[in-house]
Amino acid sequence: MAAHEHINKYQLRYRPTGGDQFTDDFHHEIQAIDKDTNTRVGSMQWTYTGRLWEIEVDREHRRKGLATAMWNFGEKIATQAYNKGVNKHIPIPEHSVFRTDDGDAWAQSTGDTVPENFL
Image 1 (cartoon, rainbow, N blue to C red):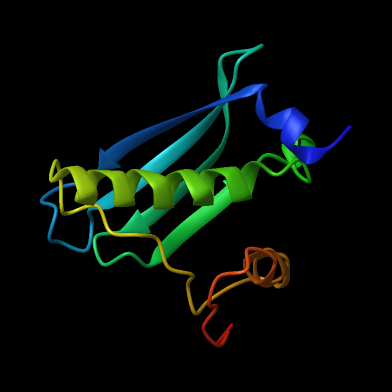
Image 2 (cartoon, helix red, strand yellow):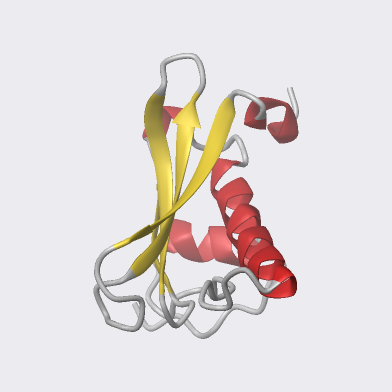
C-alpha cells in the first residue's frame, strides 16, 4: 500500500496555540487525528516566525507519510490565508536548525531548503 493511501485514515486540523501571536509562546499547530479511534496520533507546531518547533508522529503511525502531510498542510494553510487576506500572520513553516537524525532525514526528504543542522 502506498503512503498516500494511508493518509485518508487521518484528519488534519489546524489551530493556533499559546498567547499573543507575536510572542515566543505562540505557536501554530496541526494535529493528525486517526478517524477510526478519534485520537491524536501526531502533531506539528511552528512559531510565529515560521520556525518548526516540533513535529512528532506516534510510533505505530510512522512511515505512512503523515509528517509530510502535516508539513504540506501547514504550507497550504499559510499560503491560502495570505492569498485570501484572511490572516497574514500564519507564516509558512521553515525547518529548524536543531533536528534529530530521524528529523534530519525527514527534513531532507521534503525537497525544501533545509538549513544546517546544529544538533
